[in-house]
Length: 162
Image 1: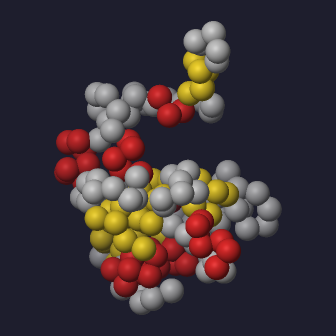
Image 2: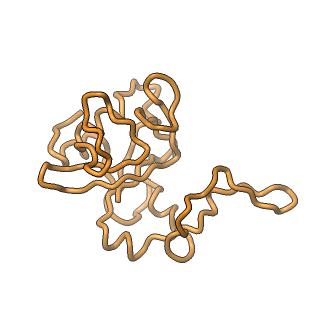
């Protein structure tokens, strides 16, 4: 798994279904994608990604990691560096054994104590028991896996620096 966030909890991404404007721009507090090695190289699986017209459009095949990273994360000028992404990469086996979310971060609680969903939850059961999502999205902590900045991740997937 790959968790995308930063210390500020605000990451600018393009080409996202929830985004606005021509570039489908959105600022996520965090986002999660699957990064996988395949015969054709590193691939990203992101159900929220809107493929560029010149990219493959088969979601089952994912998107070439370098193309995804370049299309999703624009170069940011100095005043906007706080929106730059960090990537926490976690191998599948430890992730599946450890991750848990009770989805409490998806609710708001009114003064009378009633909780309502900020957005409808996914239809599948909440993963694991308890809640340790914060360990995964806190890019300033020693959480699981390793944290890379965009240029480092581009080098990792074999695309060179941004």
